[in-house]
Image 1 (tube, rainbow, N blue to C red):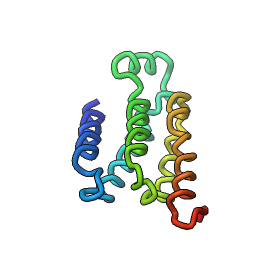
Image 2: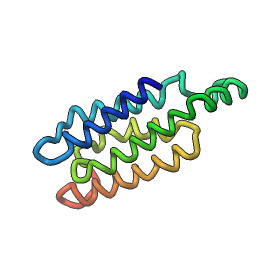
Image 3: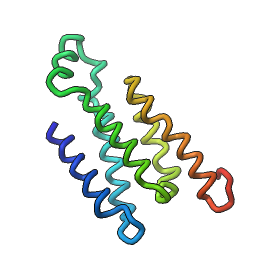
Image 4: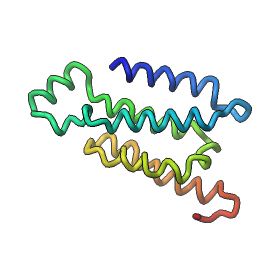
Length: 131
């Protein structure tokens, strides 16, 4: 839970200080996405691997932290605006990892990122095609 709070603080700082054209930091954003995906896909958060009793106890105490960070990944992706093209195709694999987590709400929230990636590739690539 502490780690999730720290990642949420990073989210706030990135959006506030490193998003506009003059101060955008590609490496910071790239590190954020990879950190968030690593957290979300970490073995210890895969609730499906636990017994039902243990799963219920964890959800009651902490909730499903994967959903929370997954929704943040989605929101951060859409916040990128024209910077999204800088993350294509590098983020395709990590986002695919997120969508493979067997949590329906998480999948519903993150699969549209792939469509958005295709739209960005087509609209922002300069020659309006897919490479």
